Every structure is written in C-alpha cells, then in structure tokens.
Length: 102
Image (cartoon, rainbow, N blue to C red; front, side, top):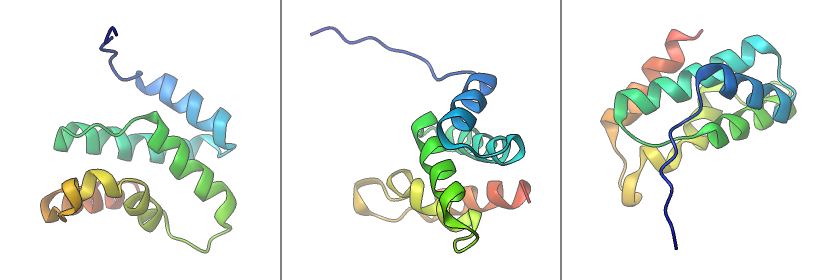
C-alpha cells in the first residue's frame, strides 16, 4: 500500500466545494470555511472540507432550529474531544472563531 500525503485545498476550492455540495449561499460558505480553516490553523488539528460540507448540509436543512455555533461544535466534536476527552482550550478557540464570523 502506498500513502500519499495531500495538503488541504486552498480557500477558494473549499468555498466552491462547500457551496456546490450543500447549496448554501456564498456568505454562509465563507463563514463555514473560515471557521474550519481557522480552527485547523489555530489547533494544528485536521478538520477537512468534509467538515465544511457537513456543517453546510445541516445549516441548509435546519431552517433556523440550530445555531451556527452549535452545528460547528457538533461537526467538529472529534477534534474538540480527542480520545473522548474534552479539550477546553480547543473549544474556546472554536467559540472565538465562531464569534469572529458573526
């Protein structure tokens, strides 16, 4: 088996994937992508465009029942709770990023 290390997509590509796969508008896609990319950079974790698509899909279908922050917390829970142990510092970073996009 061969392992190929592939870097993350650039921001524009992540935006195109997020909008095309979820149907969210450009502004919502920018908010999602910026939060996921910021979290990736700030915590050195590995959320991908798949997390963006997950957040976008939920936001497109949720009709205002869930807040953007709650959806992000849920979609990024694996990175927030490594090995099942809550990481308060990562949660605070994510909440700060969510607040910056309001």
